[in-house]
Image 1: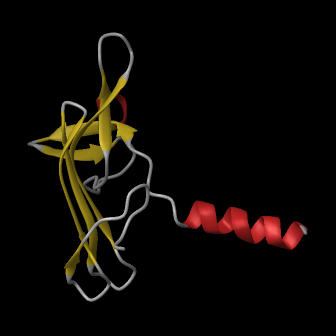
Image 2: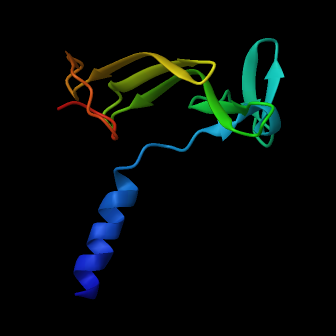
Length: 105
């Protein structure tokens, strides 16, 4: 029973999308390119900022890649609203995006 629970937990964690970060407190803007505070690598991922009431809003474009180097997902948010979303299979073919997880149907 413990093995089944562990495998299920690992699958859930392994299939989840990366969490967005607050770009106002975590990223540094250097000539229009955002870097994490502790690295010299450009940041690539979802970001958010906060409304005045403290509620989160996502902002910008995020790209997620398949392990083979092909693009998997590309989403764009503006003022917390999803503007566009595209998905590709592992062969690079555009496909319909799945709700609540990265990748194609």
